[in-house]
Amino acid sequence: MRPTVEIAIPVHNEEVALEGSVRRLHDFCRAQLPYSFRIVIADNASEDGTAAIGARLADELEPVAYLRLSEKGRGRALRRVWSRSDAEVVAYMDVDLSTGLEALLPLVAPLISGHSDLAIGTRLARGSRVIRGPKREVISRIYNRILHLTLRSRFSDAQCGFKAGRAAVVKALLPRVEDQAWFFDTELLVLAERSGLRIHEVPVDWVDDPDSRVDIVHTAIEDLRGVARLGGELSRFALVGIASTVLYLLLFVGLRAATPPLAANAVALALSAVFNTAANRRFTFGRRGRDGLVTHHFQGLIVFGLCLGLTTLALAGLGALAPDASRAVEVAVLVAANAAATLLRYWLLRLWVFGPRGTAPGQPGRELQGLAACPTPRPRPQATASAAATRRMPRT
Image (tube, rainbow, N blue to C red; front, side):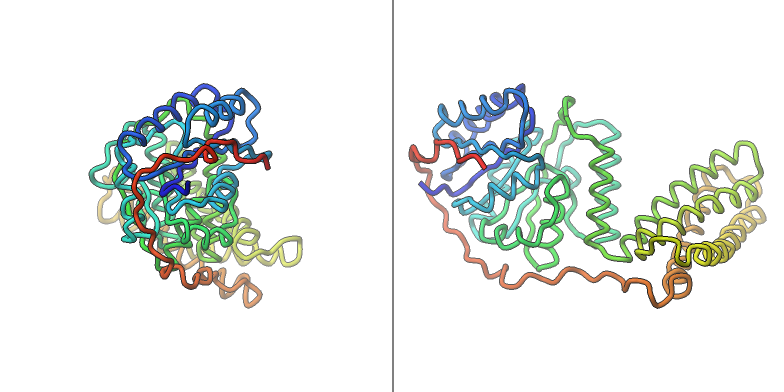
């Protein structure tokens, strides 16, 4: 029987957590969700006992199915499950169930009623309650801030593993989504927002899983690549600028312990400028090889001189106005001056260093047509799923 809600749980080597989480979710949906449902375990090429556990759960629990994929990738798993789903609303959640299940009904109800097109759980909105380490908290906030600055997104939390969408809308978006891994749902949200679709946000209770298998550094790098791909030239320049600023500040603070502020500023800015020119040459403007390499770096040094003059004037002005200013005030003034220098650097690189051959600034992806007009699903009463829903989904 066609379910109203289908919940995908992508897993990879989760033999420890899988059974307990699926049974807990199954019991909750039976007792608390007033719609027919199906739970799909999407196995991303697990090499432990996950496959046996998933297949057994599909045999034992009536609205549970098991799908085996031969390749890894959370985005790949969600794409496979959602593209073949016959449900009216598709959703997914992380296997650790870090999000409180009480948020599931508020997540899917606006989709079933037709009020919204997609819905996300958010740990960064007022009303959410979050227990997690400071490192993950800082990384999450920085990442979402980068999305706001570079892609002009408005949703508050792109990374929360608790999302849903009207199936017709999601299936229309899927062909435009390129990522197959962790950036998949962020890209889906960005495309939906650019298409004028309504995204509903639900503050959630979140308890971080201390046994998380996510490689934070690798995931962050892949996410930044996805941001650059979606944002075009200006976003790529912004990402290089952020990296250059961080490098510059680290160098300045390190050098400041042994050298005067003007000397520390000059050396830090020179080293970060070399990195900035090289990164923008390859990453932002797509120039590779030795053609024009020396000229580009020479012109980049001239740009560096102008930026050095701007930040030097800022430091000199601070020294004249507040000679006893603290190190924190020095850094704050440098951040402001460096932001102005970054804008100057972009236009000089864009119009002079890399000239007319530079790639035109990226434009947002072509908006999808007709998504907002997708038919509104009608609520269905809770119904007992047929035996067909319990059988394993075919191996792909």
